Amino acid sequence: MSGIRKRILIVGGGAVGPKVASRARRLDPEADIKIVESGKYVSYGACGMPYYVSGDIKNADELVVRTPEYFKKLLDVDVLLETTATSVDRTARTVLCRDATGREFTLPYDALVLAAGAQPAVPPLEGRDLSGVFKLKDIPDMLAISDYVKKEEPRKAAIIGAGLIGLEMAEAFRAKGMGVTVVEMLNWPLPAMLDEEMASLVSRQLDEQGVRLVLSQMAKRFDGTQGGRVKRLVTDSEAIDCDLALVSIGVRPETSLAVQAGLEIGLTRAIAVNERLQTSDPAIYAGGDCVECRHLITGRPVFAPLGSTANKHGRVIGTNVAGGSDTFAGVCGTAIAKVFDVAVGRTGLTEVEARQSGFDVVWSIVSQTDAANYYPGAKRITLKLLADAKSGRVLGAQCVGRGEVAKRIDVVAAAISGRMDVKALADLDLAYAPPFSPAMDAVHHAANVVRNKMDGTARTVSPQELKKKMEGRSDVIVLDVRTDGEWKLSRIDHPSVMHVPIGKLAETDVGFCEGKEVVTQCLSSVRAYAAQKILEKKGCKDVKFLDGSLSAWPYGLKE
Image (cartoon, rainbow, N blue to C red; front, side, top):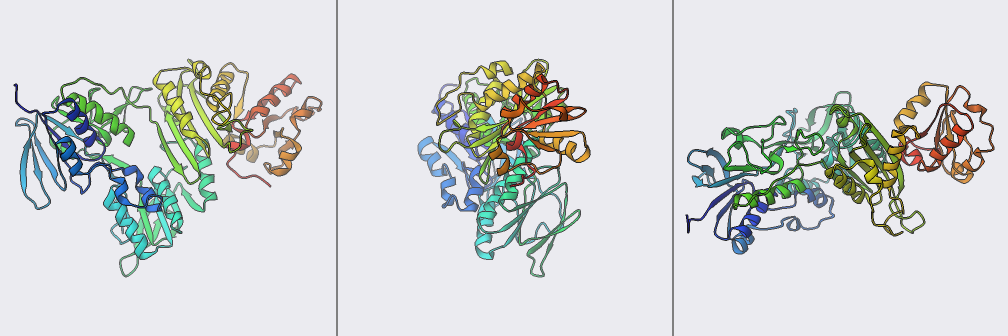
């Protein structure tokens, strides 16, 4: 075999394909490497597209990481743009391709890599072809939206889908001066990412930024003007005026070539791969948004399309097609997004997912600053931590706030990958200095609250649970234990709310507890938990504290 160049053929030039090519070239200087890409661009930062539309990124070329010329000159990799791979002959090990002129030709391979990504899911809505109705998949889509905004100067935008792209684009459209309405068929924003308690904080942020959020409604059709421009989005129960619309309800894996080739498709309808990222044909690899991954907690296949995962896949595949041996363990669903002034992150399982997977879940919500609270510029974050009630194993976390969210999510992601329990998480030796973190970080605090719940020393209610109790019962007392100054500044406005500063609680007659459920609250739950213990010592039988207290209360306060 000496002197014979290995033929590595890559279908797809997004994140995975270029990473495969670069890694394979480093390991095999002689291989014949080709990338076939159906679009006009290769190796670009798709996750940055909303920030070009908003104007944060001024030049579209900044999103293009590498050009075909770069790959040819520096890596000796041929990139064929506007070329579509139409079929695979696994026996002959060839791929039939068609270029922009319609010319068809075949390319041979020793190792084939499928990296075609995913396609936007676009429902068959009437009017979806009207001018001003867009999806956002690639740079041409991005440029089309930006050009439309400049030329037509739309004033009202409607977005179908309150997922990551939908909310990022809501911010982009607001930055361009548009009124924005987001329609979501489920009950809260970012439904695949967050539980209700944390999503409600996102809802509050959207409201503060002037974005109208329409939940539990399904889009039915678009109406247009006589000139063929969108003018209205019609849902189950209302008509929403708009002169620009975006359909952003998620993506589906691009598997058409895999299906044609007879490769195994997994339970998630993405391409099934093993830990080496080989398909059911050992000569064909696949990675990125077109494949399913193994979840590190449940061990089950999941569809988790993310650029970070795609780049990891590319390195593993690049190693293996060049003759090496590498594996990909799986994912824990880590993601983060910017929603106007707050960061929103998650890792592991949500509470809904954990319960569906058979776990008995215990969780905590804590709110504190990302640096020492006395340090200038410290910003608040709210963290929800989930664990298995039997073993204490860390199952997931969600975090929302203006402070440093990514650090906390990354710490929990590492804990999940290491199969740590909440005791180990609480004991982690994390970096501390006042400008960067409190002495006891939010991660430590959340882990200890979970431990307290597990051993029965802490009992809590969520903001959503408390709101229902306040609306439907007369035997609930909400005890605010903040200072007089804090109480005067803002508070929950409801007849069930009492105010007793914690410094006076030990001397206070607690006859109000008789026959009542008492829920203590403060700013961040620290004093509320202390108040719970004081009341229990004084003989109160049914005392809980509000998880996250007022910092996690999404329903508005009287000021």
